[in-house]
Image 1 (cartoon, rainbow, N blue to C red):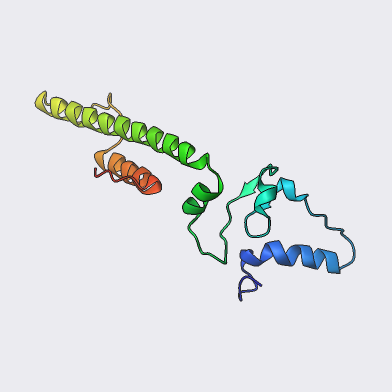
Image 2 (image 1 turned 180 degrees about the vertical axis):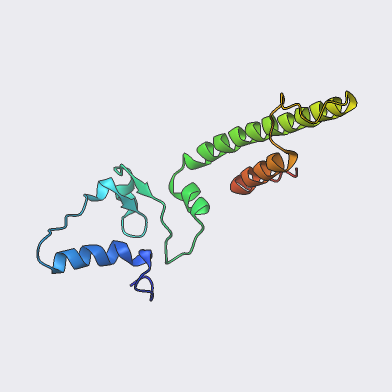
Length: 145
């Protein structure tokens, strides 16, 4: 058992096949190793033929997934850099949009735009700030907005 809690979903991948198999009705077949390669169970020699590499947690090492991904999949570093570059571009665009909105609000205030005018519909400063912080936290950026 992965969990002492009998209702835990972490036990489902073990308990369901076992229950179905012991009740005598459903045969269970495993995929060939090439279809799902796990570092914990598979050899390095078989990794080259793998169609899917599962970056599950290795209970023996407790290594973080991002660190293991960089070690197991050499292309990961380039893909991660590309994704980070794309996210930085998104952050810059959002920051620019935030600045433009703030500038438009200041200009509207100067013109004493009537409070009932709803011609400009934009996200609030707090909404943009929250989105920027969420994106930064997901990609561990060192940005400070």
